[in-house]
Length: 358
Image (cartoon, rainbow, N blue to C red; front, side):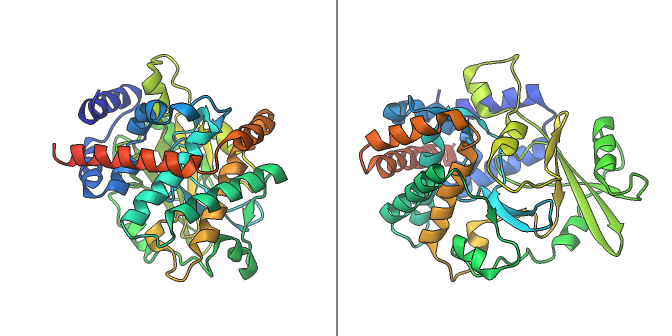
C-alpha cells in the first residue's frame, strides 16, 4: 500500500467512525504538501504502517500506553486544579498500547526533520542524547510533573524564560462562524454542562485547529462570565490510527481518557472524554506550543530533555512495564535512538516527496 492508497483507506475508515468535515480534510491535504514536518504531523497512520518494518529490532520492546503521535509540537500548557500553569503532552488522540520505543523514536525523528528545516539549531546527536537522558532519569525517579506555577526558576526546566500567550486569542475565537443549526444534541448538552452556570448565555462556533485531527468536528461554546471570556471545546473523538491498521472494525475504543488519567501529571480538570467527545477549556494559557512560537532565546538541549522526561511521565502510567523498559534500555547500543530516528525521518521525508507530487 503506497501513501496515496493508505491515505484514501484511512480517510474512508474515518468517515465510518465519525462525521467528517470534507473542507477541513482538503485543507489538511494542502498543508501536508507544504513541508516534511507538516506531512509528518498529519500522517501518523502512515508512520504506524512503516514503523514495524523500518524499526524491526524495536517493535518487540515492552509495551506501554503510549502517546503514539509524539513529536516536538505535541506539548502545551494548561491550568491545573489549583490554577497553576502546567506543561506537558497535550495531544493523546493516537494513544494506544505500543512499544515504548515508538514514542521516543517518533519524538527524535521529528527533531531530525525540524533541524533539517532549520527550525531547531541543536545538533541531532545531542538532541537524541537529551531526550534519552531525560526519559531514563525520570523513569528511574518515578516521574516528575512539570508545574510551572508563577516561578521563573520552574521555566528553567524547559530552557525558556517565558511563554507568550497567542496574540488576539479571544478576538480570533469570537470571529469564527457561528453554528445556528445542526448542532448534535449530545454536544449541546455536554457543552452546557461544562459551563460554570448551565443557564449562561453562550454562542457556539466551529473551530478549525490542529493538523492530524483536521476533518473531525470541533464545536466551541463562548460566553462572558464575571467580567471576561470563557470557552469550552468539544472535539469529535476518533480511535487511534492503530485501530485502522489492525483492521479492528468493531473495536473503536479510544485510549485518550485512560492515557491522561494514568500519566504522572498535574491534571487539567476540564480535559475529559464525554461519550464521543473530547472536552477541554480553551484559553490563551490552555494551548499547544508550536516550535515557531517559542522564544528565540532558548536552551534547546534542556527543552528536549524535558520532552523526554514528559514521555517518561506518560509511560509511567504503565507501571508494571517500568522495570522491563529499564532492562531493555540497558541492553541497547548507545546509538539506537538516533539510528532509528534517522531511518524513520528519512522514510517519512521520502513519503512526503511522493505525496506532494500526486
